[in-house]
Image (cartoon, rainbow, N blue to C red; front, side):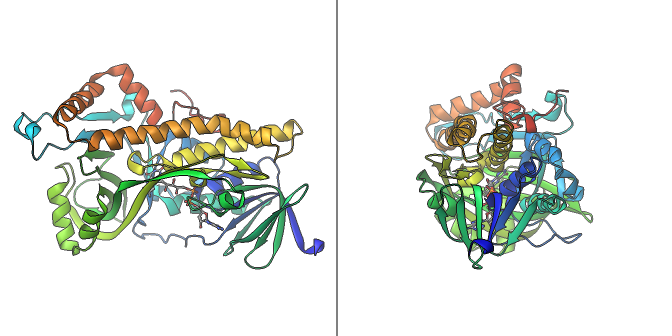
Length: 425
Ligand SMILES: Cc1cc2nc3c(=O)[nH]c(=O)nc-3n(C[C@H](O)[C@H](O)[C@H](O)COP(=O)(O)OP(=O)(O)OC[C@H]3O[C@@H](n4cnc5c(N)ncnc54)[C@H](O)[C@@H]3O)c2cc1C
């Protein structure tokens, strides 16, 4: 039996964006790594319309992927560099505030890349393009073995290793197992780590579209009490402009919207979204997601450490989820690298606790920040609506405060590990 067990230094369960990033980083420390996933995305064909799941990567995430040699593997024609992001509130449709002069266009906060002296604030691209770029990088690194099409059948803790029996019957052992297996993490359950979790009353409907006119250069979000409406531009492919819309609303409304024909949905989007929405040409795909936040009670157990959505999920309204996961990855890579230099075991609880210490507070802070937006903008009380609008307008005009918010949103500030630090301009 012993002969059939494959031993590596680290098994990473989940070759998603976060797990594949950790593999690329740990490979630089000359560790032997097994990267396991139950299903990998199909490669993207040239000219293929963008797939429905997209992410807005901030500058620090981009820098991390560059430093790990993965960015170069992401086809540039699948990524759109966005130069501004804007937040506004939709004019009130009923109640006292609807009778007052409409100040919502004054009360728009718009953050520009040039405010930071940069050409762009980040890139918007398909999750699959990011993951496949990382996996291309993985393929260049001889000390990573990628095993796909399997899950974990069981796990046992030995005195000096953790054993994993895979669903194909093979057995692996490792000094440390990284659980990067997403929100429903099996590794979190195996480690016996509980989590705080709470569902939001809103669901998100994502709609991929093509639109007319020039390529939009920025992403924006318009708040309404029912939930925000977001627009994310995607790159122009073969002369066609693509975009992604996210409509947050009650599960009932989302179910009704999903029941509309493409023509009806197009009409509805064009009527309800703010006028900034470009003219939709075609609806390509529609999907919806329930929204929940969760936070693992601990980020590590016996010879197991969690990262990315396995450790925390947040409301996606500011598009920060995977950016937090990338920063987890960078800190974990750095802390395990330091452990090797200091001759500490990779599974040393002090090492893993140190990783958690650097990440938990910031992840929690982001989670609370998203809640402030979520609950703040869902409030229909007239004084709150007026204060909110004045706040947005003032935020737009308050130089230093605006600059700080932008630095956090783009990953230039806020517990950024060295591996992801963006150089000053
Ligand atoms: C509507 C919506 C919009 C979003 N928009 C943004 C955005 O704009 N920007 C942003 O930063 N984030 C966004 N997010 C969040 C982002 O998608 C997640 O944070 C991110 O996908 C998490 O990456 P991950 O690698 O941790 O987990 P996942 O992407 O879930 O990857 C987990 C991997 O593990 C594998 N796996 C799972 N279980 C097992 C198992 N038992 N055995 C083997 N393999 C397993 C899966 O196949 C998968 O490959 C959004 C989320 C939603 C719902």
